[in-house]
Image (cartoon, rainbow, N blue to C red; front, top):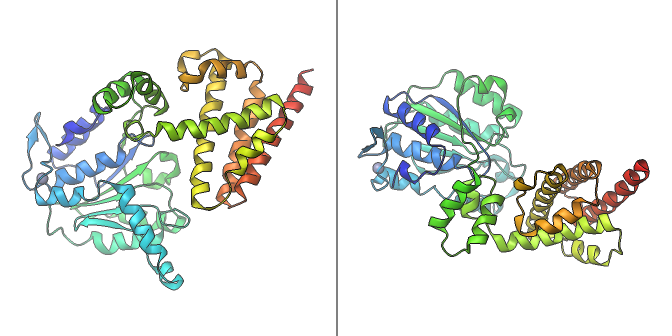
Length: 374
Ligand SMILES: [Zn+2]
């Protein structure tokens, strides 16, 4: 156990450990990188190292033992998703008046506080930052350093301003770590007060090698496919649900094919009809949108002749055929339409309706572009 368990981006990890070693870990840190790159895992590893009771040194750099009481209690929050779901479920049972005043925070060790986006808007709110302010100026008691991990960078305006106040005068013994897939989302005044670390996407081959050691249950061709679909993120590769992905992708293909080929829409409506209501429908639709984006990206790559960058390699021949029937403009328009569906979903429009609208709009844009081409 320790930093040796972290895969990829070794240069960044080494830089962070050097700072930990000199006891000069910054008060404010941004860790950016794609989803599943290991931002949260790395932040947790830093929190453990700062508070580990045995403070081991490996390769001349500070590490954590993973077994002392501090490491174990901090590690209790390693599974962020699970804790977050639990916290949200508790929040949902509250009376409406209490909901307003209750903010989601995860804390399994007194010196480490995790701040996820708060429902229902899934933004970091001022109430959460106030909790951090209430807590941050008290010296650590059970560890050496207080750590605050903000798991997303979508802040409400008031919350971002409150955070800025802390960043202007952080106490000696605290570090705030902001995780983000898009640093541009943070206020420039926040960014300028933070030291930034970036976790880059790993090459396909590296992800595939990792899968060979960790997912022996998969066939080599499945590992090859997942390595591409995970887009260089170990975390995504690790938990990639291939069967679910392929189911969603089949539906996305039906949608795209129906738009391109203008055949009768029985198949299309049968597909979109299964995407109706509830939380399950929402997850399903999100998956469909995600796979549709990945198909559009591949179609674009095929149109450009960059065949070697295609991710959905198991259906490459079919995609190549489809890409021959469409134009760049069509792909551009399809991506825009897809963004509309996403927008509609956020506003809770009827999902199947917006999916049907998506397919119909695609077909019309194809006619339009076809007419323009003539
Ligand atoms: Zn320890």
